[in-house]
Length: 68
Ligand SMILES: [Zn+2]
Image (cartoon, rainbow, N blue to C red):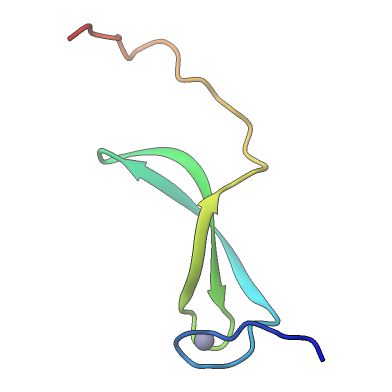
């Protein structure tokens, strides 16, 4: 018997999850692509992680690295 995890909100087995693209926001700025996983039954968010597929886009230019 396979031991499936269950949604902490609705208690149904999380055999499927919705995967959504979301942005990680730092100091009010969108900085990193993330993925959120939510229950297909009740939409409770089960987890969020940095998108491992995201290509690194170094932020160059405009922003000056002001020394403190
Ligand atoms: Zn649920």
